[in-house]
Image (cartoon, rainbow, N blue to C red; front, side):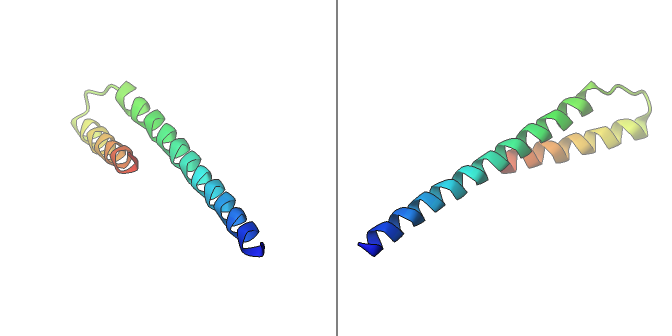
Length: 68
């Protein structure tokens, strides 16, 4: 009986950990999407600044892709 209870608790702990991980990934993805939108909203005629924004956008999009 102790094993059944222990297994049940472990399953519940695993479920909670998985849910916390999913929620953390979702928050991270939302933050990255906000960064992406901020970068896209910026306009500049300065070539150096434009290159920096393009690099930042590429980095943010790569992070979004890695999260899934």
